[in-house]
Image (cartoon, rainbow, N blue to C red; front, side, top):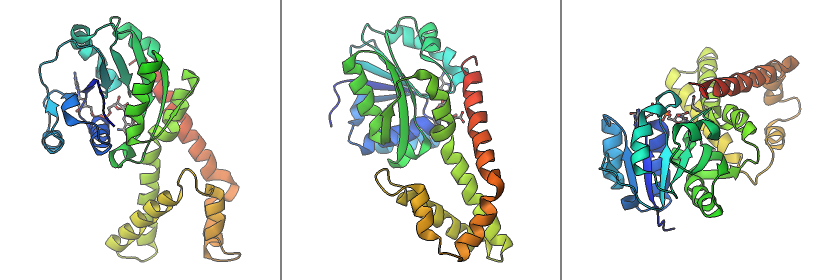
Length: 269
Ligand SMILES: NC(=O)C1=CN([C@@H]2O[C@H](COP(=O)(O)OP(=O)(O)OC[C@H]3O[C@@H](n4cnc5c(N)ncnc54)[C@H](O)[C@@H]3O)[C@@H](O)[C@H]2O)C=CC1
Ligand SMILES: O=C(O)[C@@H]1CCC=N1
């Protein structure tokens, strides 16, 4: 895949680095990518050197630039002046910031005509991300954004921007919930008598293996759960506790709702 645009990534933290890794792994030429991030840490400098991308080069206005915003929503106003100096009539901004709406972005960056608001997730770092996005841009820019965002894993467009906050609560924040489940499984394994390192290895491999079986075109989660569950066997005994009275289901619903609510608050941050 070759890109005829330059990509300027603002924010070389966890998400920015994850996307950078995904872009490079998918074959995007490192010469096309510039990373802008104040006080780059060793991890970012190491990654940039490994990938061959430039960090904090002087920027100039250039036709066909895609500017990817991976800074915290609370810090985005800091880069308004830099963006103003490089914006051209066909600059595309792709924001992955939680909460910030396209209307917010238009207010922050009045010189920029075209926007995509996206929500990736951290597994983008290993090419297994899930990204959703909404667009207010030309068809060509939509295609460009799709190529960029789908290079880190699964991708889909949402028709309605109002759905972005709920999506953030499910797929944007979701990996953290599953990492927490892995921790719970480790703790439970220790409580059941396993040595801590063994419990952790078992929990990690189990969550990773189960995740791998949830391939997009594979059996449903419900079917996979049935496949593990022998009638009157050990799994059934465990699931009777986990699913009792829908308590966990209710907690997960509250979890997603709280994350979506926070995304709405971050619009004003
Ligand atoms: N971490 C995650 O799993 C996900 C994060 N996001 C979004 O990605 C964005 C970044 O989040 P993280 O990477 O987790 O945060 P982070 O704190 O790891 O990275 C933020 C980066 O922005 C840089 N930065 C700060 N001020 C800057 C400026 N003025 N110009 C350029 N860079 C600047 C920081 O040096 C840092 O490298 C947030 O808006 C978040 O909502 C979206 C989906 C998932
Ligand atoms: O926690 C956050 O705000 C970001 C957005 C989704 C995942 N991390």
